[in-house]
Each structure stands twice: as structure tokens, then as C-alpha cells.
Length: 173
Image (cartoon, rainbow, N blue to C red; front, side):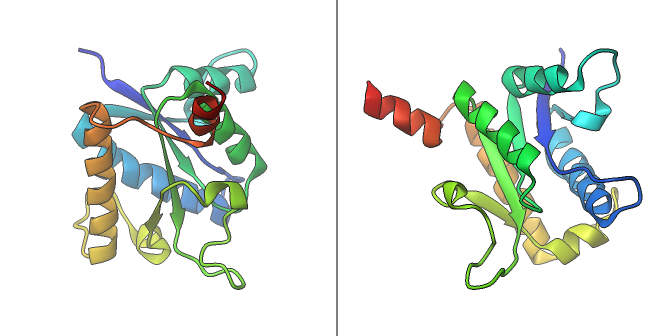
């Protein structure tokens, strides 16, 4: 049986940058600690190795994948564009972000994401993560368990997925 696909919407950053280091740590954590256990392959834009337009391939993954996880870091415009596309499909998407305090707000996330549940990971613990190592942080273990539980719930179809687009559609109908 073929594995389900999870597309990871994420800022990626240049090779060697702090953004890339974080993106790679998050991908590794999700892949080895969460998705493999639930029989999902993890695909990020830079994993797509084929000819043609990368944007079209990304959009196809956003539309077709069983699950999408969006990493809301650095207020990356591409991430929010891709998240909006996934919302338009009305298919499940899990948003994650680090716990940060920015000014008076707890997370620095844009207004439009405030109504959605955003799973928060401990940034320092993610940056220390090495695949195959024991998870010693209680916060990181909780983050892992929360994601596994929500994905299992999605897989069992025990809830109706909602996002700003589905809410607007219900109002119109």
C-alpha cells in the first residue's frame, strides 16, 4: 500500500542560513517523530525534483496531498499564499509556529491566523533536535503528541475541518 502524502509548506531559506537550519530541523522532526509513525511521506518544495514550473508542482501538492502542515515563521508571504490555497481546497491543514513574543502579541502571527488553532513548538528544543535521539523536552514531547492526536483524528474523520474559507462558504450557502 502506498503511503499517504503530507506536504510541508515552509519558509526554506538559503543553504547555510538560520532559516534553512530551522526549516530542516522542523522537517526532520515532523518526518521522523510524527509522520512516519502515521504512515505519511513528508514532501517539501525543495524535495520536488522534476522539470517544469516549480510553482505548478507546489500547487498540485497543496491541492492533492492528503495532509498539509504549514510552518508559520518569518511572516513569509509564500507560506501564507500557499496556506490560502490549501484553505480553498477545504482539506485539512495543520498550522505550526514557534512560541515567540513579538511586541505586545504572543506570537507575531498575522491577524487572519488568529482564529485558527496554531500548534506551538519550543524553538530551542526544535533547534537541538537530532533524528533518532531521545526527546527529553516535555514541551517537545507534548507538541509531538498533540500533532499525532490531531492527525489521527483527521485520519478517522471524526470532525469537520474548518478554516476561514469553509466558514465563509457556510455563511454564503
